Length: 225
Image (cartoon, rainbow, N blue to C red):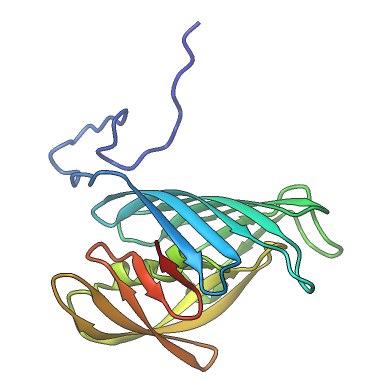
């Protein structure tokens, strides 16, 4: 029996079909990116495929336990739409005590659909419809990949400017979702790297990204290895 392949891919990835192949941007070769946390206790690795502003990423974050926080393993699947905003994110968080799941999707009308699965705390609804303060981006706690996603969407590697960006913040390990604001401002750019000042909660760091907008060095968070 033939089982159809329902895996979702970015345009141009082997296995995709398009009724207008000439109009779809060519996908770049898939990349494997790995970051080590600034404290040495966190590792993130992701396979990313980009096509224009679309992106598909499959990643994992492993956080070592401490005296005040549990060890956590997180897997995620991220899809960006043709405008560079989040279309869908699936997250699975595992600690020694529990597993939690989150599915969050965003429509072009600006509505987020947040599905927390079956692992709910008191007072939580399984599915919530929300605007999340107008966010189109997501920041996943501890992730070097997610923190730089607005840079490409805003064109900061090509145009100077500062942007106050509403984002949906997903915390770990509970996968709670709340609106936050970040400020992104281009510091300098050349053919090899771009430096962007990122302000969050009154703290500003200068993040270095490569030619594709992926983090090379995020002070206090992670460095690419």
